[in-house]
Amino acid sequence: MEDNDLIQKERDRQIMEIVRHFLLTVVTFRQQYQNYKLGSLQFADLAKLVDDRGQSLLYALKELSHALYRRSSAIISEKEQIFDLTIGSIFHLAMKIREDLYQLEIYGPKYRALIEKGNYPPQQENLVRQFQGILSRAEKSFQEGMEEIAVLTKDVFRQFKELLFEYRENGLLIRFFLEETNLLQEVKGKDALKKLFRTLYGPDEAQPYRLAGESYFRSAFYNKAIQTFSQALEISPGDESLQFKINLSQGMEQFYAFDPLQALNFFEKCLSLAGKVEFLEIYRAMIGKVCQKIQEEIPGRRKSDQHRDLVKKAQSLQRQLEDLPPAASDIYPT
Image (cartoon, rainbow, N blue to C red; front, side, top):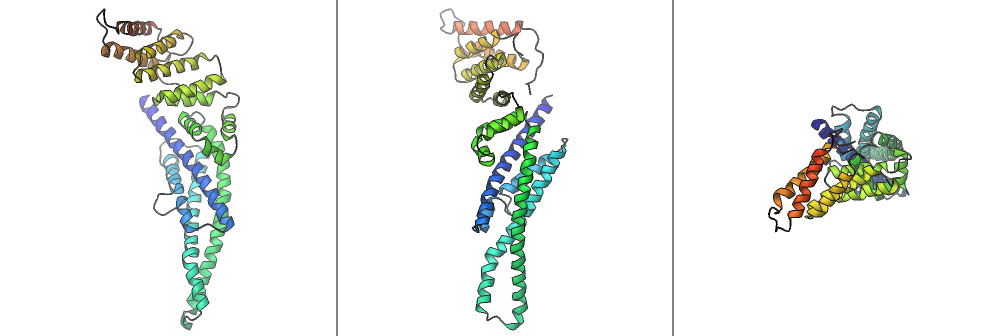
């Protein structure tokens, strides 16, 4: 079970990286396509989109896509296969327009200067005409390539929106959308996040925040978990499972902020919800571990010790945990 969880976490991370690079690629190509239409696109501008050193957005996107959708042993859906093939095609088209633009920008001026002089030897006239044909074909190829990439980008963007529905349970991806709302809006327009969540979760508006909160919690970003679970609770007031998660996150946050009393107070609130929410074994273990650490690391054995009550509270909570009925599950919810 642990190995499967690690595999799923790695897959979730790979998907998030693919989505991030895809959105950045779309933004970059749109900017460069606009410059192309204005006649101001230069060879150096293409380096961010595609290059021959493996440092460009499209190269990274292609490699990420191939790694997950071609080289992994996971079962790949038809949508994922089509997405991967389209990204690969766009990359190779972009490499071709890169070479075309290089010829037009570097060799074009030299050729035109040679023609203007007109003093080349007669025996080289055939070569000059060949240069003219090469540059003419490069210009046509460049224009056709830019338009073809524009069409493919629109098509793959439609595929991408359908693909996201398959990833709607990926909490790490939802975290990315919440943290990169500006990038999402740049690609999809005003209210992009709200529209995306409506498409993925329908009327359950709290679900994306639940998923993101759970992901933050698993990664020990307790403050972010508190914020995100709280957003979910605002949408779904009275949800005791969300209140439990907030209390648990606050307890862990306060413990690592060196405020053990506050941590125990929040854990006490968690225990008050036992029987009303799913109290997983892993949550019990976390609270129990904190209670044990407080007993072991904080002085409180003498009657005169100011921390005696704190230690007693930790002992009491630990006994309450032990008296709880067996948990239904010992893994994180997905």
